[in-house]
Image (cartoon, rainbow, N blue to C red; front, side, top):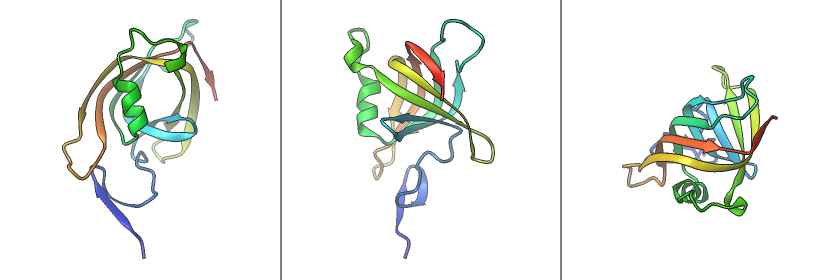
Amino acid sequence: MNRLRIGALGVRPLGSDAYKRFRFRLKSDGHSVAGFGKCSGLPTSAAKPQPLRLERGVTRDKDFTSWISQPTETWGASKRKDLVVEVYNEAGQLANAYLLHECWVTMFQGISDLDANSNAVTIETLELDHKHRVHA
């Protein structure tokens, strides 16, 4: 018998990928922490990496929520994270992935999800800067 979870992302089997419907997904420490509908600032021919801007997203990860919600003015290297941005095509297949080294948050606009049965945080905009990126 399948067990189901009812929450902000609808009804889904327990253990299924909460970010599957998103074309842009963030990973931290090997697991998915957020999904987004829009992304800009991915690698171009520019020599200096541009900040990554992610929009219309959601996270269910408490540690990630805490990290993006902290003030960034005083961040040293110890608070920065290596993140992976995964880009999926319309068929839901992984098309590209980028490793962003030593990321920090330069802007975060979000609201708590209004579903009392969910711990999801809706992210309007998340902007990340980083030291450098590598095509993974």
